[in-house]
Image 1 (cartoon, rainbow, N blue to C red):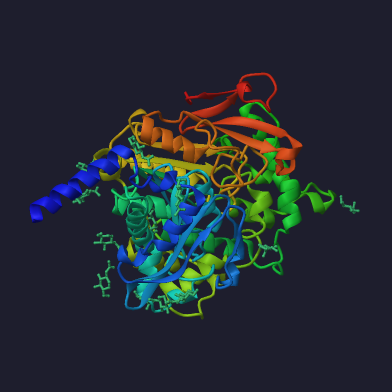
Image 2 (cartoon, rainbow, N blue to C red):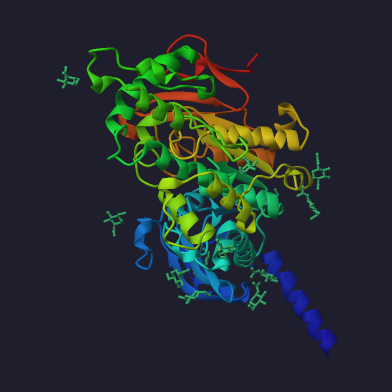
Length: 541
Ligand SMILES: *[C@@H]1O[C@H](CO)[C@@H](O)[C@H](O)[C@H]1NC(C)=O
Ligand SMILES: *[C@@H]1O[C@H](CO)[C@@H](O)[C@H](O)[C@H]1NC(C)=O
Ligand SMILES: *[C@@H]1O[C@H](CO)[C@@H](O)[C@H](O)[C@H]1NC(C)=O
Ligand SMILES: *[C@@H]1O[C@H](CO)[C@@H](O)[C@H](O)[C@H]1NC(C)=O
Ligand SMILES: *[C@@H]1O[C@H](CO)[C@@H](O)[C@H](O)[C@H]1NC(C)=O
Ligand SMILES: *[C@@H]1O[C@H](CO)[C@@H](O)[C@H](O)[C@H]1NC(C)=O
Ligand SMILES: *[C@@H]1O[C@H](CO)[C@@H](O)[C@H](O)[C@H]1NC(C)=O
Ligand SMILES: *[C@@H]1O[C@H](CO)[C@@H](O)[C@H](O)[C@H]1NC(C)=O
Ligand SMILES: *[C@@H]1O[C@H](CO)[C@@H](O)[C@H](O)[C@H]1NC(C)=O
Ligand SMILES: *[C@@H]1O[C@H](CO)[C@@H](O)[C@H](O)[C@H]1NC(C)=O
Ligand SMILES: *[C@@H]1O[C@H](CO)[C@@H](O)[C@H](O)[C@H]1NC(C)=O
Ligand SMILES: *[C@@H]1O[C@H](CO)[C@@H](O)[C@H](O)[C@H]1NC(C)=O
């Protein structure tokens, strides 16, 4: 009897296969099928220690609202570009901590998985990046990184939350996201990617260091590597500028005006063109003494000696107790945006919170007297190795064939791009490789005229975000370039950036430029400087 049943069911299976009546793969189904598959799906079968916050089929064009989000994140809604199945979970990471998780699975799936990161010391979900990935066919996850809002007060006496922030949240949501993707589409993702900038850039590099299997391709913008020292560097500005009431305080109008103009006067034409963009700020040896007031000169356009010293100090590297380098200098050229935070004469909020709630555990910390002992304390604590300064990524890049694409704005006002160049050299020497060997798995693109992660006077749109994208084309989009590198083995030599007039596509292109990978340097070779063919990537002699 049993044998007959087995035979009959085998026959049925055969008939169904031949007739083509097997369920279509999910990603080929129509909207109604997708909707019911979404609602029938049982996520908690595939995830441990979680509860469901939201589970819904969302059609393209819907504006999703997030009333529970901490208001400091300034994200209240997201327009969803394509049909998705949204699975929002609360996943516990310990008995004292948990992450708020978003997994958005698109109807039209390419077989690719993407995890998104956060920024600063924040716990803000980047819904916009999740949607950006969905739009381009990825199943995507994101999280609040273990706490809520842009501040760090939740870290106080809660090492579990710090652990989530440093690495555990991203690793957890990546595992969960892969589990859900496999179960939902009945097949595992073919390739796995990561996209993040700033604090999110650090998360990507941390993942390469700790969990080399998690991603095949990591796109890390303006990475907050050397994190403890970077936090000290950012804390050090307040002591250098003083508060606005101090005698030699340099107001924003001076930095944005004649000081920035003088930087351009001294350095803009090193690359051959006066266009307000310094292609390679490492070549700019700015001399602030050129701005010293002549006798009788109108002092609104010049500096006294004390002010010159402040400019020099603000643009100098940070050194530690034995004169060792702690963090490289701010690159000249970023003055116009740096006045908003680092040069504003107020403590840098992320550094202040880190020292208060992680390093010293007291709100009494005040960084007016920030000094070498604070640098030492932050460096010594280094919780969960948040430092993120690997000298050998060979488990990721060689063993796993992982690929790492780093980009950094050359007018970054929050993390100097000189830090990324230093990290690149640190890895090269740690792995004992020259740049042509490093090129096999790591490419660093210097995006001239770009501020922190996005915007700026340069050709800054390189596909780092939805609003920074001109299309999913491997020639001009860092994420698409990574996909091609991983899946076809074709590495990007340049990334074609775009700047629209007033940053609006409707106004047309103001300039486009091919950004070079380090150590190549963009050099003007003649013709209309707004066009990419007027520039060439050359190796420094
Ligand atoms: C699923 O899609 C097929 C083919 O388009 C259609 O015939 C069928 O009715 C759909 N089923 C559901 C439950 O919507
Ligand atoms: C993913 O699924 C595997 C087995 O299906 C399970 O062991 C693991 O705990 C899941 N991961 C998470 C983070 O829930
Ligand atoms: C789930 O929680 C239990 C108890 O806290 C823990 O032992 C286990 O490791 C957790 N599982 C996962 C996949 O995190
Ligand atoms: C979405 O949020 C923005 C602010 O980020 C707000 O201006 C807009 O009114 C919101 N839209 C809806 C439909 O809630
Ligand atoms: C989410 O998890 C955290 C930590 O495990 C818990 O404190 C919180 O109450 C949970 N929230 C919801 C909405 O389940
Ligand atoms: C995954 O990759 C395989 C082989 O490259 C390809 O045949 C398949 O279509 C891909 N899957 C999806 C869902 O795209
Ligand atoms: C973050 O907010 C969620 C509600 O949206 C809450 O469940 C969770 O406990 C919060 N996390 C922390 C660390 O406060
Ligand atoms: C100094 O320059 C400012 C702005 O250029 C002008 O408004 C002011 O009148 C000048 N003062 C003197 C004393 O020339
Ligand atoms: C970070 O700062 C500490 C303390 O001054 C120093 O010893 C260390 O070398 C620095 N590390 C890097 C990568 O800059
Ligand atoms: C602050 O608390 C953390 C644990 O959260 C601990 O590692 C650190 O040593 C404490 N710092 C001080 C100055 O007590
Ligand atoms: C590479 O992975 C192995 C096995 O997990 C580990 O022992 C080793 O320390 C890793 N190497 C580096 C440089 O991270
Ligand atoms: C880098 O790490 C790998 C894996 O742990 C190891 O085999 C290799 O020797 C390391 N390279 C150097 C230069 O230390």
